[in-house]
Each structure stands twice: as C-alpha cells, then as structure tokens.
View 1 (tube, one colour):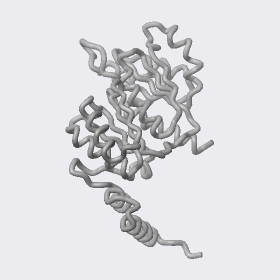
View 2 (spheres, rainbow, N blue to C red; view 1 turned 135 degrees about the vertical axis):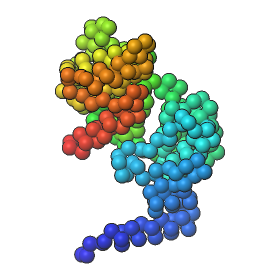
View 3 (cartoon, one colour; view 1 turned 60 degrees about the vertical axis):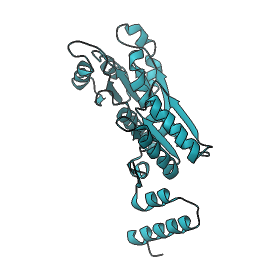
Length: 266
C-alpha cells in the first residue's frame, strides 16, 4: 500500500477538523489549535500542541497577567487539551479561573493550591497520563514547599508518580539519613533548598537516580535570595542538574521528561 505523504496526512487532518467543526463536535478554538498548533485569544496565543510536540503540558503563567487574562487562557486550554495548568496564581487569579471555568465547563474539576500557587483544571472524563516511574520531591525545609510543590504538580500532570519527602535539611543530617532508603526508590529526584543550598549536593552523593537541584530564594544577607544556593548547586562536586532559582516548573518538567523516558524503556 502506498504510504501517505506528509502533505496528504496534513490535508486529511485539516479536512477531519473542519468536518468536526461544521458538525458542532468541536469549537473554533479547538479547530484552530488542531490546524495551526495553537489557539488565539484576546489574552494571547495558547500553545495547545506543546504536550504532543514536547511531552510537557502547556502552562499559563498567571504572574504578570490580569486575572481575566489568565482565566481566558485557562478556559482555552481546557477547551483545546482537556485540562489547564495555571502557575504563580494569586487568589484573584484562582477566583477568576474558577468562575470562567464554571461558566464554560460546569462539570470540570478545579483544584487550587494556595501554597504552590497552582490551579489545575481537568475536564469531566479527562484521564491524565500514567507513567511507570516515580519522582521524589525533596525539601530542605518548610520555606521550600511552594517551589517544590510547583515541581510536584508539573511532574504529576506529565504522569509521573510523586513521593514528597519534606524537611530533611542538612542542619540535622539524621533527618536526611533516615529517609535515604525511601529517596533511593525513586527513578528521579528533585531537591529544593534555599540558604546555602547544600541538600541537593548531599542527596546526589547518596542516590543512583538523576538529581535535579532547585535553588530557592530563601536566606538573607550575603548570598541571600537564592544566590548562594544557586552557586552551590552549580559548583557541586556530586553530579546533578541545576535549574534557575525558584524554577519549580522547569524542575518538574525535566523530572517528568526523565520519567517518560524511563517509562518508555520499560
């Protein structure tokens, strides 16, 4: 049988999309996203194809956006992909998203976490991916929870199982040592730590799995606001990967991509 060319495949996809639109099975935003790879809103263009292209669901960064703009992008995400992930959301952002989603899709599930400042919306019947791989998300202290929590949410949305291990900072190594066996069970480890940021380098010397260091903007004085934590992670003599200060989304996405690769090799 003759193999279809890419142009023929694209033409067939476009025709199917237009037929679904004409039949009322999909809306304009979803039709546009299928054809162009993104959907246009008054608040900007939403990259609806990112998960298919990159393996990472597109997120709406609420910080810097008005609540109505974040809500418009979230509803577009829900319409085009079946879910929405909003990060760095204030209570006003979360309230606007909840109201907009309630109007557009009353049966959708909306989960707002005030600590992680995330809003996760799943359409009714949406089935998130499930990977045969686990990410351990480790924090040095309570102040690291918001950034670590953002990483956890992203890794879960990619499909990884997550084991959260909290408050094992190096000020008392016993707290870490009694959790080492548990951390070693994970396929990839994210470690969030502020101040001098020693925890990621210590963990990386104790486990075989890849370790992703997330410097957190805690601490004060010389090297405060994450500067010392970032420098320490970059200068680590144990092998690890370092993301930017407070970059929980990036750490969670990287961990999720590693989990996907492990799942694909099972």
